[in-house]
Length: 285
Image 1 (spheres, rainbow, N blue to C red):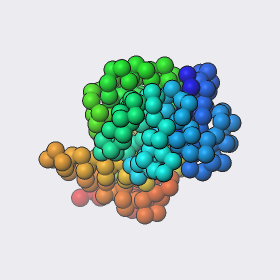
Image 2 (spheres, one colour):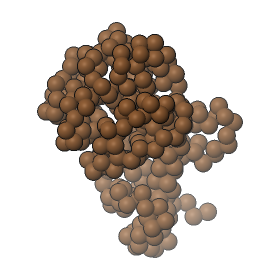
Image 3 (tube, rainbow, N blue to C red):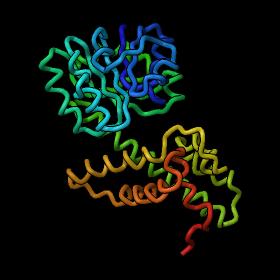
């Protein structure tokens, strides 16, 4: 299919390489043009509108809600080229931004799928992402050949559902990682071997296995999920939970821990939450 990718950072760039390898024809746009050109997998457009114009499927993978708004609704935003395409918004940007974009796309005859993903660059490369898709069956089916090239597609309901579910998933990931960092330190304080502690906790929470270098060895690169992005996602999540009067004290405390760490290690992998324990023993009270 003819696919436009708006945003070619780590995840968007990995998606571009994966889709090219699966035979799709790509047009790319990135705010920093050189990053898109360096991929060497398709034509690079000057604007989001130009990228979207001849595409059948338009994927956006951007930093936050403001970046999504600009890419879609800005002066040469993708909405200006909307006609019969299906737009697939894959950023972790919260549920509100879709409501601003969808009416304009629908008016132009385009369709919209909200499709944030669970997984990082290695999962993109393996085609094993979990794609949380919300929207109409017709729109999802139109985009399915592209989405299935990236991983498993799960239809989770109406627009807003996928964005909210992604925030729940990222709250879990951030919380488990923060708890693992605390317990690694506590285990060391109790005289246990660090590898034995990690072996035990990663059996209970296998997702930790990809962050052993950070949690055990305090090596926080390469960055699979930047710690600053965990702070952003936890903030979005807590806003959703507050609106629904949910009680989430653990998530609130987790955000506070990540905010403390972000003052010095925000650009490193989220496993750098372990840096909070590098210079002090765990509290044994």
